[in-house]
Length: 138
Image (cartoon, rainbow, N blue to C red):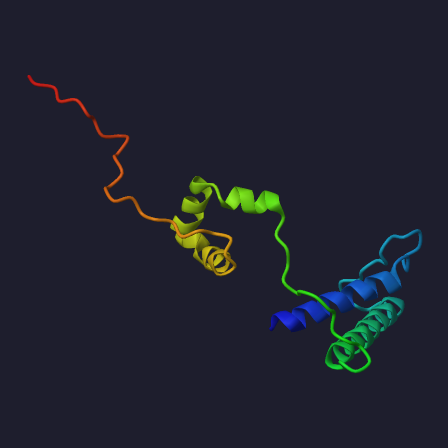
């Protein structure tokens, strides 16, 4: 699923939630019937689905229509808070992210965005802190 489709689905779900808030009374969500046998519950579920579909179609149509819904002006690039850039600028953090195979996708994204400086490997191997540095003669 593309990022655009996920974004449109999220917007439609948020609008649906706002439109249906309080359906269960006193702002609580309506009860869920796991067997889906209750006719009133089935009607509410169907209504929720149809409202979601309407919002999805509306958001998708608005995004595709540049004539009536002009694209926003200015930069669409997200801004990164200074606190995050300060943390990523610390060598220990940058080394931990860049050196972890599990975080390789994150490191690639951060490097592409210019948020993670290239980490230079040390010229000599790091010392083993568990190795004994003294020699005992018998």
